[in-house]
Image 1: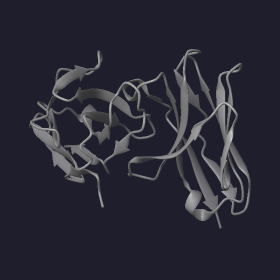
Image 2: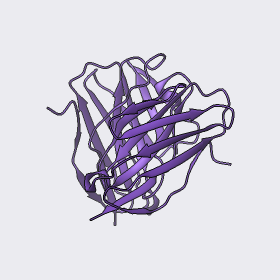
Image 3: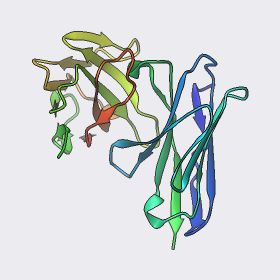
Length: 110
Length: 114
């Protein structure tokens, strides 16, 4: 079993749609959780951290479920510019121990 | 302003011909990392430097080496590239590895092996 698993997609959604991604992790001792965004042939960029209480940043909402060991990302009112691969990243307290998922590909269609 | 700079953006090499990828940073971060990312896969940590202290991941092949002559620069040397080494190579930095998990990535070098 992979340490961090994501549905690879692709998710093809129309502009304005709401889309949700899930990510599961295997290490119950994981302490920190992130979503990164990666455009084609570009570097990953931090989208948001995921806190225990859940957090929201504009159209993006992240949730953590420690009991079931998964995190989620909800994107409301999708824009064309949201098209990218979304990487789930799980940490154990240091940057050296960050584990990346292989990503979920999103395409927002006009 | 770019804070982590990788050169070149695209690199083509021949099977077995040594190649060096470079990374520089203006952040004065003490930790620098090299990741390998193949198409549709997660970035895979190869090794990192904590100041001058080199830390190799257990499954990183001996074919991959690294040098960090000073705080600002770090190099990835592939001694004898194989076809399976074609990938995006990402350099990243962080301030302290123990408590700070924020990574700053360079734009990557896409390596092709012919």
